[in-house]
Amino acid sequence: NHGHLPETAGLAGVFIAAGPGFRAGLTVPQLHVIDVAPTLGHLFGWPLRGTIDGRVRAEVLRNGPSGRAQEPTRQPSTP
Image (cartoon, rainbow, N blue to C red; front, side, top):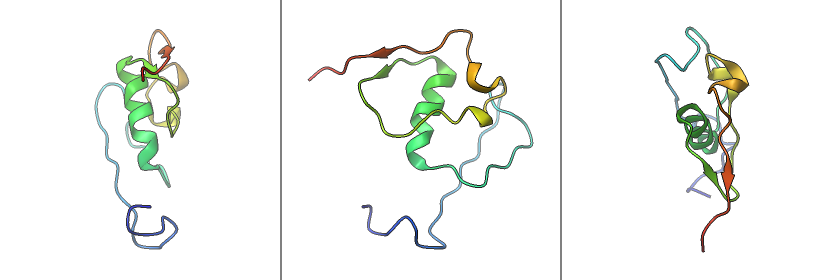
């Protein structure tokens, strides 16, 4: 909880992305903040470590789910 209920109307954020890795002219009805890091990680080829919240939002990437030539690998988290 970040001080409000996420279901509260009017407390939505905005995500704007542009560049060669993103689809142009796309409007996504809703993108959760927890999806930003996995999506950017996938785009930049960063390995995902351990268990993370959120998911890759492939629909915003120019090349869809294969937004990279090689899928990022999951590495075990270090304590």
